[in-house]
Amino acid sequence: MYEYLFLLPLFIVIVSIRQINQYQRGVKFTLGKYSKIMEPGWRLVFPVVQTYQKVDMRIKAVDVPDQEAITKDNISVTVNAVIYYKVSGAEKAIIEVEDFYYAVSQLAQTTMRNVIGEVNLDELLSKRDIIAERIRAIVDKATDAWGIEVQSVELKDVTLPEEMKRVIGRQAEAEREKRSVIIKAEGEVIAASNIAKAAGILSQADGALHLRTLNTLNDLSSDQSNTVIFAIPLEVLRAVEGLAKQSHNKQ
Image 1: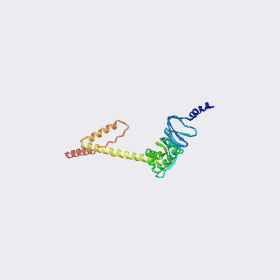
Image 2: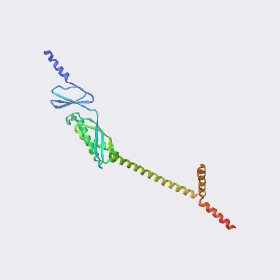
Image 3: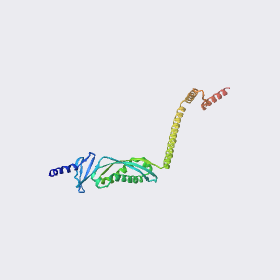
Image 4: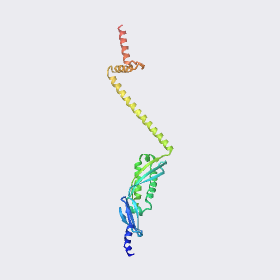
C-alpha cells in the first residue's frame, strides 16, 4: 500500500497539467484569488485549490445587428456595423466584466445610436468613415477598463425609408438637370464669344466675308439633298447700286 503513496504525487501532477495554446492566455486563481497569467504551453493547475480560465487573445469580429436610430434632422434610419477588437489584458477581461463579448456588443449598439443622433443624414451618408472612427474611439475608451482594445469599426449598411429614397432620387435628378443647364449655358457663352471673334476678324480683312460665303456654299453643294437659300451680302448690293448710279450719270 505504501508503494502506491509514492505514485500519488505523480498522479496529482498529471491531472494538474493544463495546455494553453499560443493564441491564448490563462487567468489563474488560487483559493479564489487572482494569482497570475499563464503563458502558452503546459501549465500546472492543482485541483481544488486552483482554477483557471482561458482567454482568446486573437482579434474578434462582432456583428452589431440592425439598429433603429434617428438622425439630428429627425430622419429614421436603420444601421448595422461590425466591430473588430482584441483582448489586451486577459486578467481585466475576466475580473472586471462578466461576459466581455456580450458587453462589447451592447456598448457598440448604444454608442452607434447615440453618435448617429448627433449627425445629419447627409453627414451619415457622406462621412461614414469619420462617424465609424468616432464610434471606435468612444467604445475603445469605455472598454479600456475591461482590458479590451478596439481596432476598428465599419458601418456596413445604412437603410433609409422608401419615401426618403424617393426624395433623394428626385433631388439627385434635379441636381443633374441643374448641372446640364449650367454646362449648356457655358457652352453657348463660349460659342458666342468665338463667333464674335470670328466676325471681327472677317470684318477687318477685305473680301474675307465673300471667301467665307463661297466656302460655305461649296460645303453645302456636296450634298444634293440640301436646299440652299443664297443671301447676298449688303456690301455686294451697295456695290451694284453704286455701279448703277455711275452708269446712269454717264448717260
